[in-house]
Image (cartoon, rainbow, N blue to C red):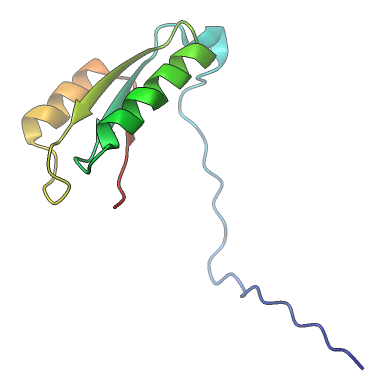
Amino acid sequence: MIKFIDPRGKVATPIEPYELSKNVRANEGDRLSVALLANGFPDSELFFKKLGEAIERRLPKISTKLWNKGNAGSPASEEMLHEITSSSTIAIAGYGH
């Protein structure tokens, strides 16, 4: 007799759905600006540049702006964070190796 075992573990905490605070699809992103924060790893800036281009193709009225913190091992400066939060309605940060 074959016994099948489900390899998935049991979830210990309840799943919390993530609700977007902005409807990015409404009016093709009109009046929304997206900050793209590259982490400083090689090609992270190129990745976010391409991501920004894809977002703008999909939502023609949205605007994107790219920042690069320059060093993956360091946090973004307070000045950079202030600039991002004061000029953008949405932010996307990346990390990796």
